[in-house]
Image (cartoon, rainbow, N blue to C red; front, top):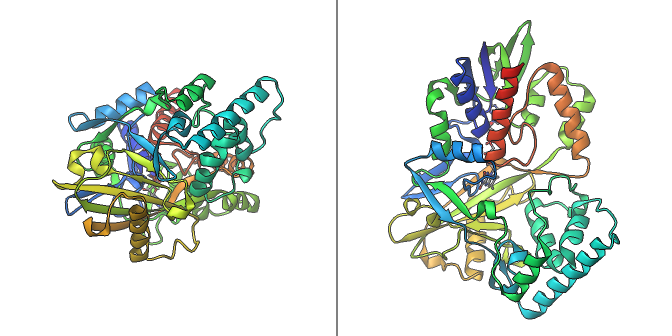
Length: 438
Ligand SMILES: Cc1cc2nc3c(=O)[nH]c(=O)nc-3n(C[C@H](O)[C@H](O)[C@H](O)COP(=O)(O)OP(=O)(O)OC[C@H]3O[C@@H](n4cnc5c(N)ncnc54)[C@H](O)[C@@H]3O)c2cc1C
C-alpha cells in the first residue's frame, strides 16, 4: 500500500512518520521548496524567527505533549510563561480576567462590577442563551472585561465581527473564569489562568522547525518538495496526483493541505460543495521580524487590543524563548498582523510593514528605531480558521463530499478547524489508530 500525503506541514509529516512506522510506503507531497508549513523557522544574521508566527510547545494532552518533548529531547528549553496585555500603556497580566488589579481603578471597578452582575444574572437563569461569539463574551465576562479587552482584541485578530461568529469553538479554548479567581484578581491576590500553558517548551536551536525536522527525520527521503498539487484524479484503483507537469501515483490519498486546494484540484465536484468550500473564511498572517541591539522586555508574548497602536495584534520575544534565538547582546521581536486574503494590508510592501511595526513598538516604549539591526517580513496565506455563523453547515458539506470520494482530511486547514500543534498530532494519532482497527 503506497500512501500519498498532500501537504508537508506538521500534520502531513507526523502522519508520514506514523504510517512509515507501521511499515507502509508513503510519499509526502509539499508545494513549497521547504517542508514544515506553519511550523517553519528562519535563521538569518544570528536571529531565529518562526515564520508562521510565534510557536510554543504546550498541551493538555499528556500523550501528545510527551511525543513533542521526546522529539526535541536534548535540545529543549523550558520557559515559564510571562504573558501580558498592553492596555492603556500598562502591562496587564494575561489572561485579562487574572490581571484586573493591573488596571486603572475605574476600569478595575467597571470590570469586576459587571462581571459580578453578569454572574448573578446567569445564576438566576436571567441570561438568554448566547447565539454568537459576541453574546458569549458578554455573558461569560460581563460588559467591563468584554469592552476593555475581549471584544477589541477579538475584532483585531479575527478581522470579523464577533456577532457574526459562531461560539461552538470557545468551550475549552477560552475557559470560563471561576468567580473567586476574578474577585481575587481584582483585589490583587495573584491567580494564574490557562495553567496548562504556564510552563512551555521551545527548541533551544532552530526555532519551532526543529520539532518538525525531528518528526520528519525517519521519512526524509519520502518527502517531495516543490510539488504544488493542482489535480487529484481517481483512475481505477489508483490516485493520480499532478502538478501539471508530473504525476505521482498512489493507492491511497490523504489530504493535509488546505481543503480549498483539494477541492480546486478535483473534477466533478458538485456546485453546492464548491460554494460551501468558497464560503469558508480564514485569515492570512504577516509576521514582521525585528532584531535589536540591547535587551527586550522580559515577556514571552504580548497582546495589543488597542487599534490606535497600529495593526499588530500580538508581539512575541523569541530571544526570551531561547538564548540561541538572537546573537549575544541582542534581542528579538516578532510582530503578527492578521488580515483578510486580498485586502489592502496584503498589498503593503515589506518596507511599509516594517515601518508600521517599528512605529507601534516605539509608541509602546519597547524599542527605539536606532536599536534596530535586523528586519524581515514573512507572509502566510492560511493562518486562522474564522468560525463564521454558517461554518458548521459549510464544513459538513465539504467533509461529507471528501469522505464520499475516499480522501480523508487531517490537519488544521484540511479539517478546517482551529487546531494547535497538539490538536493536529492528536488528529493524526487518532486517524492512524482508526485505520489500524478497520
Ligand atoms: C500565528 C500562529 C501561532 C501559532 N502558535 C502555536 C503555538 O504556539 N503552539 C501550537 O501548538 N500551535 C500553534 N499554532 C498552530 C500550528 O501552526 C498549526 O496547528 C500547525 O502548524 C498546522 O499544521 P498542518 O500541517 O495541519 O498545516 P500547515 O502547516 O498549514 O501545512 C499545510 C501544508 O500544505 C502545503 N500545501 C498547501 N497547498 C498545497 C498544494 N497545492 N500542494 C502541495 N502542498 C500544499 C503547505 O505549503 C503546507 O506546508 C499557531 C498558528 C498560527 C497561525
